[in-house]
Amino acid sequence: MSTLTVLSIGPGVTVQDMGRSGTLAYGLSRGGAMDRLALAEGAALLGQSADLAVLEMAGMGGRFEAGRDLRIALTGATMRATIDGAKLAWGASHLLPRGAILDIGPVTAGAYGYLHVGGGIDLPQILGARSTHLAAGLGKVLATGDQLPLGTDTGGDTGLHLPQSDRFNGGTIRVVPSLQTDLFPQDQRDRFTATRFSRDTRANRMGVRLASEGEGFSVSGGLSVVSELIVPGDIQVTGDGAPFVLMAESQTTGGYPRIGTVLPCDLPRVAQAPAGATLDFRFVTMDEALEAERRFRAEIKALPTQIKPLVRNPHDIRDLLSYQLISGVTTGYDPEGDMT
Image (cartoon, rainbow, N blue to C red; front, side, top):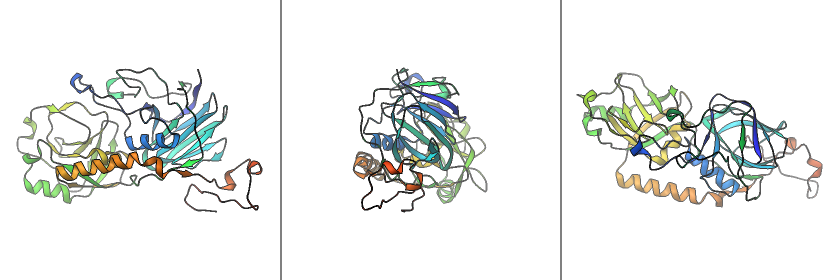
């Protein structure tokens, strides 16, 4: 079996997929990738299912060696990446030759980067998924020396580029009312939507704390709310008045009052907001929310139509003389966005 060998690794790299469905009744949240849109982008670049397992890299990547010629794609938060020292464009697919070293460094924008491989990471399924669920003790953070089994790649082109949606610097997040929104006085709801929050440093796969100036938020009798079903996107207000957006590995029940719920299509923006990024919230109607979700799914379905050939910067092509140049001229794609 072919493997991807971990030569060195950052502190928060895990295997993830779309997560587990149908497990809430057993006390297990969905889990899976923090940025599910990034999974769809990588799948489009490699021409394979978005259900295949990938590596999710929280802030820092690692160094990897392929046991076979391997197609890879890089999506999500932009990170510095090279193959044997040659720079790689992000949001693109590449060939990782057998024995070559893929080096992925720290993020330069966003929070979570993703490494996709042709055929996916072929770990055994647990409860219907391969994703690591740290809060539930399913799987583990990757360590140096791990050898990840690879699935069968059906093949396809590399050297393809896909523009990624702008979701790495915070912004406006759409929410719908939750079961407890009306428990918050109108003046507090108005203040919530008028507040410019910043993404706190206290954030992980369970939730993102929102920091703001001024007093916190509360409801009368908020600590006596009966525990009930929780889903990713719920915004709980804890005892100190700070809102938390619950994420992929949230608990399944909770008693803190919820001032609203983030639309699933906007959760990637919350997940990818780096510490200190500004986030503000806007309530929408259920009809508006459903229309936003419909457009989001249509955009995901259309991702393959946006793929274009990636023309590399000649400065980064170590074997340039092996390329056929027309009239001695070539056009290069610079990962920073310049054409040369």
